[in-house]
Image 1 (cartoon, one colour):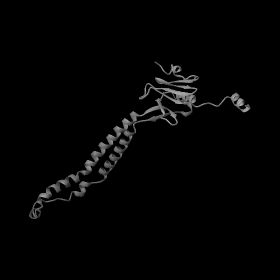
Image 2: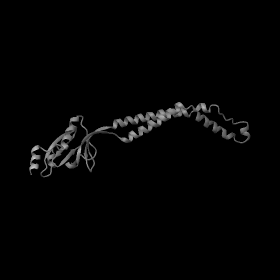
Image 3: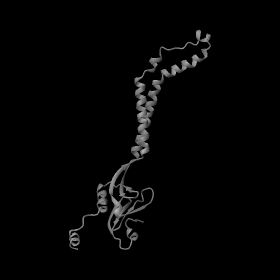
Image 4: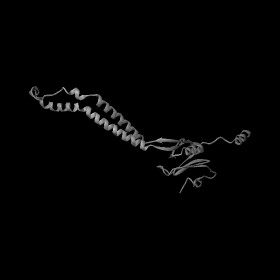
Amino acid sequence: MDWAQQADSLLYDGETVTERVAVGDGGVVVTSHRVLAFRPDREGANYRQADRPNVEGATCRTSGEFGFLQQAIKALVVGAVLLVAGLTVDLGGLVSGISFDSGGAASAVGIGGLLGPLQAMLGLLARLDYFMRVFGVLALAFGVVVLAVYVWSRERRLVIDVAGDDDIELTAPDDDAVVEQVQAALVPGDAPPDAVGDDAGA
């Protein structure tokens, strides 16, 4: 059932429809008292309503999963730092002249067994700049992938701003004229001149 077209059955006594705007699979129906939003293509309730005095207007916004953006920024920053450090620091050159000989005097004083692991640590330290470059590239690649997921998750939404309550979100139409039509229907226009004259003479 197309509730946007059958909204008259939801009206209160004395309430009248002033504007209907089709938005995607649903629509916005503005009455003399309320704004009725039908959004079957969105998560959550298929139907939202708000009293006219609480409705402040409608805008088109773009949003995405902010968690993806945060993860992408962190990965890109870490990757850039690791890659720059790995390219600028030559740890192999710093430790190339250091060597622990496990024989001779070291064996005489009983520390010969410790020199082997120390030499292995020096070898690992000499290759640390290489590992920083590798992990830097991997972090940058991960950041790019997550950033692409964030961009893919972004979507345009038609948001009806409601004071004192959650805003009403609908899938944004491709035609910006529809957004302008909704905005014009939500914001009350100026009173006609004859109405102003009647009030002034009262």
